Length: 379
Image (cartoon, rainbow, N blue to C red; front, side):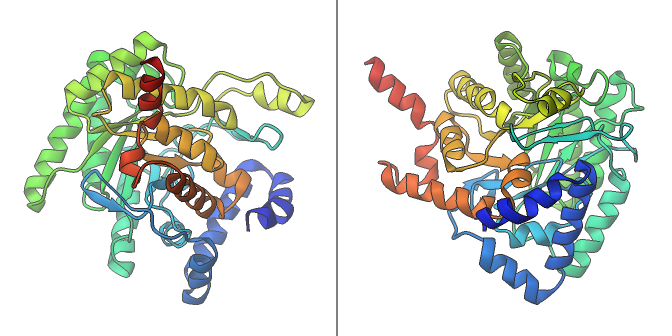
């Protein structure tokens, strides 16, 4: 089905405005998953066999999930379930409703398998998203896989009021989501990345943890995992500081990485125009840097802090490399744009094959294998 998508659907989508094509794809998935017949067809075509992983207090049927940004409004939850994803991350969601940056704001390079976007956290706001999730749960029940929420800062909220902004969104979404990701690394909200550092990050985590504790007590259940998502553009010193601050503040793990403001060398005139756009780049050009940062975080934390690997995953080789670097879960966004709905099945089947060819019996055993192999070489 991946070949079929590349030969038919991808060329059709390539001639459309990127953001409109994105919206049509989400709408199509929502429509197909609303009918039990087509929903079953989707499962049969695209859902892989289970490759379970236990993390963050939940069982993940596979370690591969949907990254934030693809389904900002939580519109196609049943569709993503039908495609066999191990978990779904909605958002980014902000406390306030906002339209995002002026259009056009999404640009696609098929040659480089890269996306540039400056969306600016366009979303209906956490109150409306919470209402939509409540309606979804009332009608269909809780999703069959863990549901994550990506928390962003409202553009109108000053940086010194950011902790309350993040905490408000978390409180509203708390009853419906299983894991929360503090996004302080999008390049498309002015000065947002300043919140990755020291006291600013610690204060956001502290505010979210306070909400987490309060909501857990009210609902008489345990607190929910809280992660932080970082930029791939951090220097090593900055990365060390962010990891130290996030761990000490009580984050349960880290998502590496968000989009980059760096650009690869353009080989075509179209790519030069796309790479010249402001915004964050995702896709294949981020892959190497993302994997290197996962390596470094695993090294800094002795493999004791869960790492979610995202950035340029488009095949099983990319996924396996991130597991070897230290990632326990994986996510994709641009990969679905360029490879289509068969991405999940091809990656999980490929990772399963690599696992069978390795000396490891499970994904848990394989995590960080590149570090162990490097140590054996050094010895």
